[in-house]
Image (cartoon, rainbow, N blue to C red):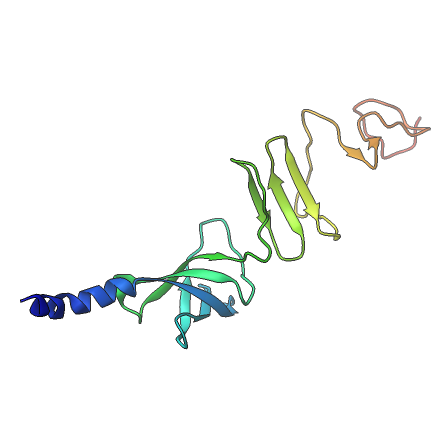
Length: 168
């Protein structure tokens, strides 16, 4: 009787065991409407054309060698989906509870800390593009220790007027 029960639930047990796997990213294709991956899954198992789901408003292209959580719908290995990708080689560490960071593999970071927002350019320029105006409210902008709010140039009238022309 027990043997018959094992034979009956064996296929179900196998499908459940195959539903979720860890995998390593071997290749990323990001040109189309959906990102697809080639994955190294179980010993010697390679999956291709694996769709990667990403949160709305956020997108990334993980490096080869990053790890992923692979879900096979209903345990069907012919329908794999990646629901998360992580790369411990570049992940920021020691954030405080509640903090959030956006980062990449070359040192660019936008870190929402408990005391403010820190932007790290990774040794490269930071650009704001496509904005007809940049507005700073509630404080000062300081560049290399010089206040843009309180800095005065000779020959320029103070105030809210246009300082683009000669002082009259």
